[in-house]
Length: 332
Image 1 (cartoon, rainbow, N blue to C red):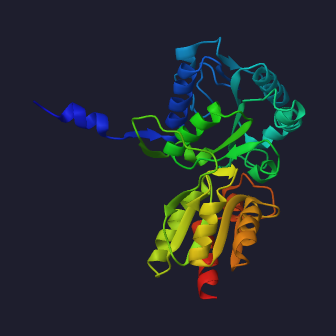
Image 2: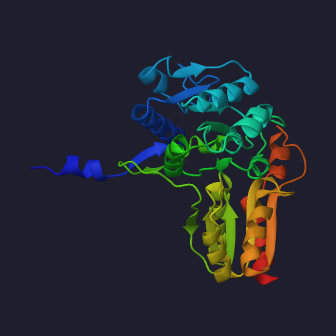
Image 3: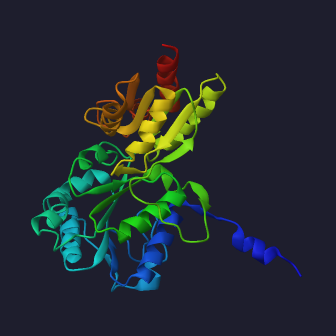
């Protein structure tokens, strides 16, 4: 008797990032009838990046609603629906336009638990897409550093299909609100996904590569840049520990501190601005625990991201910049 079917069932699934998002959303909507999906083009079109393919066909217009191009209304309606006991997932296609929904997200949803002495919560997820990919100054920003300073707001940024799936499931079960940040360049990237359900907890980083000479922290698409640089540096005899933050608020300080205690050096990498950036917060929290260590930060240039491919590439950190920064840290 052939064992091939049984072997197929134990093999991991091979999915694109966008397919992993859709899988998580479909499973959570089937598990919990209070989970709703709303946003621009999320219905029969399947999402701007096809990250919701099949969801509308399975759950229909009662639970999947297209919204107009009106981000303040989308976030405000989600906050009200969440306060009424539902679990809405609202989609803001470009992170740049999440700013238009800040009032409802920050002044209402994030503060609702505090204002009501815990009697009300806003278990909502705002999924928004960040990053540069040839779309210009108003469609390329990474503003997650603005968000991590808001009390009551969780912020997560997956870099792999497995984490896209696991963090989305955690987000839709969280008492919220949550900003789930993905990246344009990640949607077509493939990866393995366990056939069994898995949930990635908030506040837990992932060590993507172990190393001894320097700690490199990053998130979202920059994880791929970091791993490319680490592979090249290994050929020079420099061992880089690459840590994918995954969860920006809350941060996994224990993992970060343990790594820097081991390596003694730190490079923080992000696609957003370094001024008041994620890297500054990461470094400060680490140094509060272990004292100052040699540190460099790397992020976008202080300029709008151009749609010109040459200027865009100049603005965003790449593997060569990471390599040079780590050479300076390690070799002085």
